[in-house]
Length: 512
Image 1 (cartoon, helix red, strand yellow):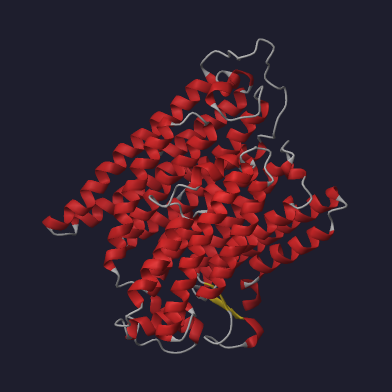
Image 2 (tube, rainbow, N blue to C red; image 1 turned 90 degrees about the vertical axis):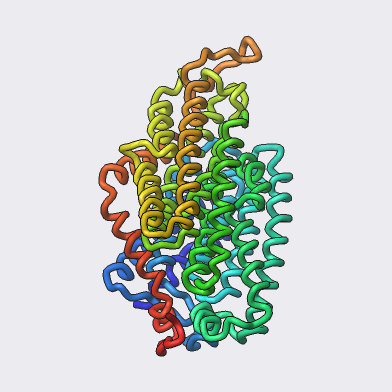
């Protein structure tokens, strides 16, 4: 059954190669790609269920080489959860692309690249060693850059170049971190590294490696001040792509920080403190940036900076409850943000000029009342208002901060109450800019710049964002199973000894 651990990578990767051969038959290529995506999600959901119910990770050793000498694919509760989240959202991304009017989605390489993107993300979550994490990150960068470059937006090539350049810098940081760790400990297997770092924390290159890894994951998750590539990149991408980039691609950095702070370097308290500080900076800056922009897609791109900041604060606090809240927030944000960006693309596709600028979208919502209902409930989820899953995420994060503050000394409570105060203010700011956008699009009169300009009768399909928002409502009303999964995942990742034993098949007595 350990073969199941590699299927979420193998299915989209091999299917992308086959889809490339089907470029002369667009309909067959599209059907093949969508079927492969559904099959990949089914495999990742099955993997998550088996790992969760058995309370044991699945480890697949490539070529039957034992760890730490071979390539390990490790599906513990965290990696299986993240892979299933990625592929669940990508199913809706494919569904949106099938109903999109963009020229980019009809490009012969669009669906193969989309499959390569999901394969890279899933592989990054399931990789058991840092070098193969690097390989999968590069696959994500290449496929994401090309998908943006072929966008209908004339700024697509520029945005793709920016992303590729910044990602290249992050790749250099990751490679230098890999080299530093290998020189210091002679291994790149995460389980083996965890055991060796715990036994010897005095290697001179270890602090440098930690900093380089942190910079890499900050760039990947668009942490302020490493965020500057994100708004342009996500705004210029095809909607189906930007919805994935802003909802699940940035979660690769979140996954990296969860692994760093619980497995590789759990002793690095300064890293946790930095995550809290930078998370708060992202919450404030992202909220203000979203409130000040004049483009709907760009508004949600800035909003991602704020939402990722919430997650990093939970990771930085590092308590079992706050980690569970961060994991729950990660999943719920992926659903909400992808839905809202898809809805932005739907509105832009029906505007007189295809753009998400408020100056063009103003008043066009009167011709799309169903989209208004979807946007209203999606906005409630993003702002954290009941009965949505966004409310559950923020409530759990606030509760974790209050609990940690009550269990701390008087001097330490400031480190919790100040972030909690800023989290509350930022949540109010989210409510302001989301519903200001709603008022602009659905309540203000439609006054086009040109007298003969009209709202298009048809555009992209609203099916995918509608279904995602329905899921957000369902998870707000019936949240217990997902909360339990997040709590179980938090409990698992705080047991690095169990992870090491599962991968290396030996006692990890040095891990505490």
